[in-house]
Length: 166
Image (cartoon, rainbow, N blue to C red; front, side, top):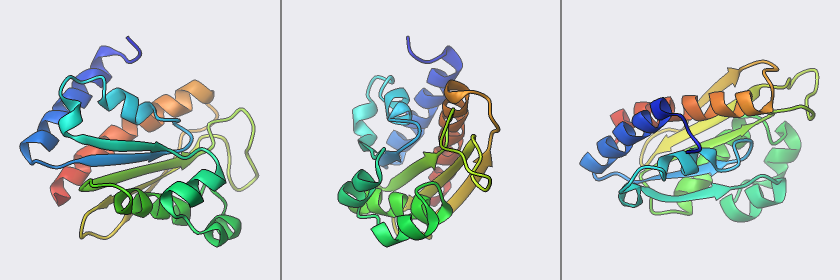
């Protein structure tokens, strides 16, 4: 098993809640590399809820697959609030989902700058017909795997929060 029992239990409850509302979700992941989609699809019957997942690790993928404007990436960097928002909006627009979650961050051990430290992760969250939300987390230099695990845990919480909007 790739994920611990507590995370799988949370994912199961989340999938059941989305299924009950007949809502579908999409993920657009960069620093987590598809871990959120992988966790959600550990749950039997998740195909009724998980519409698709995008792993857009490179800037080119963010632009080509999600439609994120290169000028936005150039101006703010891939790890930024505007790009996280654009990723979520692009994922929603390029899917048949009702809710989109995007994640972009710096898991380490390299890639940090003085203004963008290791452990900085930006989330974009949007439900169809609603304003896009942004959440920033600064986990600190916990190690690559731990930053990614923290981001996956928070992603579940944000997808739970999004249920209020569906």
